View 1 (cartoon, rainbow, N blue to C red):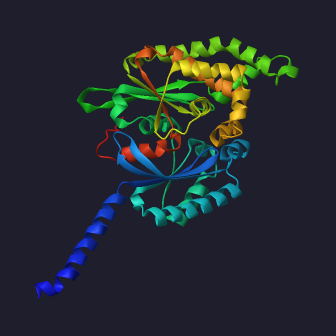
View 2 (cartoon, rainbow, N blue to C red):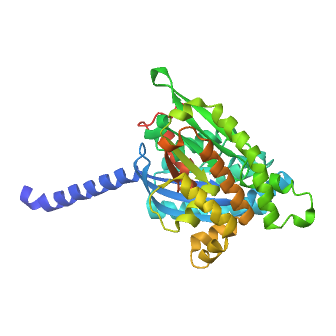
View 3 (cartoon, rainbow, N blue to C red):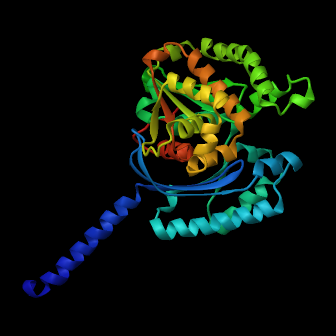
Length: 364
């Protein structure tokens, strides 16, 4: 009797084992849909070790929609924004559920802090909840820097590193201090200059409006403005003495992405790309004196073309002025390892995963 049934039993055992393995694998797959300032982004990650930020991007998709511009203009989302976003979220959820078999508790939907300024943000939240049975979280502007730090730096480096994110409006980031009884404290870093705001500030110093678009004039005014930028940056670092003892600096944001893409001109697969100050200074010289090198590169390099379609020469100069100034102002820079967070689009998702991991202390 046993011999007669051994093959069906063996088949049942193997089938059970297959589904057990498959179920276990699903626990490591996470997905996030981010409704950002100017785009919807969808990411699916296979996370091997959250403490070391060891993960693989299985899927990434994006579509540009100027949400922030519409909110700034009218104080609310347009009906077209709401309809298009809802349809996109439903379609993308269907796709990633079917293709990656993700556990529902591992799927997150968030919106950027700018959505908190939209009067009708609840309309979008309710519509997505009704259509998908999932909540839409709007990131808290006061928690944004903390979310960046948790997601951009590997948790294993929390106590030994700090982050700077050079954005369009501001430069923000922070670090984590270890207190007694295994408690942590988050210390935010903030600089009132970003790529766009610095460019605007420099252009306001051009008194002759006929010279506003003249690149030579802009570079002169940009150079003249650097002492103000250096003063503000020095104040930020002087107010945070523990940074001198940190061994690693993580950098993120469009300014660093532009530099790494245009200067290194290679498809680097690692999540973190080592940088050094001399490379940033050499890149700065090309930006200002030989910009044609990058416009030529963009003709054959899609990623370089994407940089130049995002930033013109003025913005790139401002972005790198902030990057150079920050690096030159950091205490004991020569002793630190500098790393560019290449996969900036998934930092919030990594932060969410870390928050839910029993292996990471994110209570700060």
